[in-house]
Image 1 (cartoon, rainbow, N blue to C red):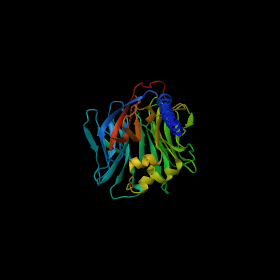
Image 2: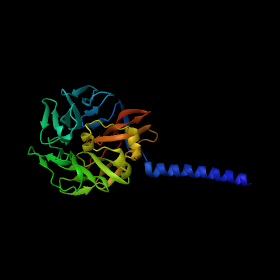
Image 3: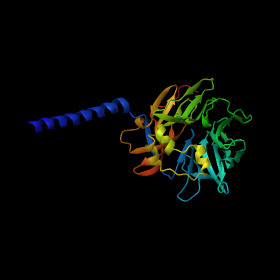
Length: 335
């Protein structure tokens, strides 16, 4: 009888676990909100942004090779943004095919030697001497990023309406702060490090409203990209592991771009999660994928006005770029 009772309890426990699993998928996962497409195998970092016409900007570094940036056309053809004796890092692309980023001499290892650029398909590179990095650009030609001070701390900068480049005057109360993206309405996203809180992120709407973006994990949130509908692609990490496992842009630059990260180990070590935030509501991306998709998302970096998301992950054990397409597109509002 004791054995029979134990067997019954074991069966009951299994049934309970199955029931809890069903409840989880019905209440937490729900119906998938994205379809995921494999864009092919890639190497170290890679898929950064996409625009509404299907152009992609990708930055890669083959083993033992140099950092290079490519413009990928909808038909799959690719062209390299190439400069002799320089590493080229593309960050953002607008609907005119203009790419924002920064370059560094291959023989240099200091942040002050990086120079921001805007690349145009017709005229090539325009260097932004007053900005060390350009991280975001909209369809109007406005762009944002940062510049390094004498202590190599990053200071947020922007240029709007073809005017002068200015340091952003809003007091973020953070270290190594930068503006990450700007949309056609003039809204901005950005952030930086705060002692005791990790990385914080904010959105400055064109209406003047300023909002903090709350993290999904214990601490640390990054605003990665912004579209014209006010959707913000974000990532969130645990604070304790974040300090030991993640290199921010300025730290990476100061290392001479020599730091490398095992992306899969990094993603799990910091409990990194990706989500779309809009007007106070967050949607966890991985909980929005089809069940058993086989993907382990490592990096989600770009979002266009159709809500499509580009990034990098592991699929069947190999590093691949992916494209997420929303099943129901959010085209309401702007900001």
